[in-house]
Amino acid sequence: MTAFILVSETHTGGWIWREVAARLRESGAEVYPVTLTGMGEHRHLAGPGTDLETHIQDVVQLIDHVDAPQVVMAGHGYGIHPVLGAADRRPERIARIVHLDAGLPQDGDPALKLVPDQAVRDRLLHRSGEDAGQAAGQAGDDWRVPPPPLDEWQRWGSLAGVPADALARLTRLAAPQPVGTLTQPLRLSGAGSELPVTGVLCTANGPGIAMVELQVGLGDPRLQALTDPRVSFFELDTGHWPMLSTPGELADVLLRAAAGEGHRLSPTVGEQPAHLRPFLMDVPERPRERVGNVDLHLPDAEQPWPAVVFVHGGPVPAGVRPTPRDWPALVGYGQYVAGLGAVGVTLDHRLHDLSDYGRAAEDVAEAVELVRADPRVDGDRVALWYFSGGGPLSADWLAAPPPWLRCVAATYPILAPLPSWGPATSRFRPATAVRTAGHLPIVLTRVGLELPEIAATVEEFLTAAKDCEANVEVVDVPLGHHGFETIDHTGQTRHAVQHAVRSVLRHLRS
Image (cartoon, rainbow, N blue to C red; front, side):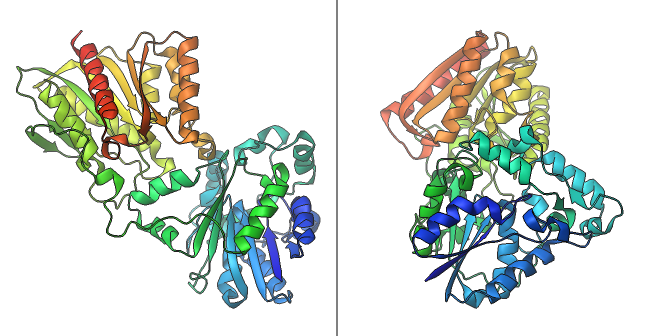
């Protein structure tokens, strides 16, 4: 018999699992929805010393009192931290760990690191100072984080699918969260590192399996463990609260996870990653100069030349080699436009995490200034071209286009923050910025086989562009995938690249 231990998100308690627990019990399973110290009906037990270790011990004690030989533990959001801490203490009792719309915290990570609301993170960091653990011992009411009001729950995760009465109940029963539970680092010995794991991805709140596979393909060593055959994945087409929005589907997924089912990611050992495969066209080699984090691909035409600055996507892990400016697709674009009489500019920017958009924007701005200052470049004829997760970086330029910016291009871009990104990236929203772009030419390459969560941002952008009569040209690639330049070598994709490049160069020369 399987026993499920269910540990919930911040501000909640065991009550939130009511419908899921009932359905699991109908299948014959034992179910133990956990109410952690200070939460739910145990809120009166919290104090300034209540921290993550307190919650880990809550779960350890429950494990010790469960008789079933097989225990599956599910952690929702914050709940994955006490789950992992307890599994590290009792690995021999655990059959599987389920990350329910939860991150992958490592040893030393506080739960605060995964809180989606930047304002909450900043407030807690300000309280805790250099030693986050001291926050729990401060006087007054500073040791508690109040739950969000009814109209602000979405800052903690998408509410897609949650009925109004369930949201009202969530607000009514929510409890203040002890600060120490969020700021105390998770400590793991590694004893539970070999346990089977299942990730349940709520696609209205974050990436789906296809997006995870894309990130794994970039070679981030932190994600390679996800290709282990003991790791499986499920998707739920709902927001961050599936126990409220789709309890039946969630119960079914938990049962299937306990049975070892789920999608497995294919390891790429011996296989060339998609982003390092050859560019879809044979492009004559052009001179290439490297200045700091910027490469200039130079033409033979008379100077001064117009320039196209290519901005790569991301986040790209800091340790990935080669870096993006040496990826075949970007080099191919740079060399291609150089052969047509414009400087192709590729660069490396520091978009290594979702919190890095600000400094990545600075890197792009510095690269543009370097290029415009080069005496071989006509500083009044520059285009910016964005790819994938680099798309949000176009927002500042669309919002207030400088006179020298002749065109903005975007290829399979993200044009609005994805649901899981939180309010920290609200500045980087091209779907809003396009309303003040005026008559700035925009060339958008849209792929027909796009990831659904990205396609939704493109449609949002195009709707806004139509409303404000922005100057947008769409180059459609009906059978193209995200990153098609190195994986879809077809006549259709080659034509799309040629078409987009010609359009951008026409705007630069007009």
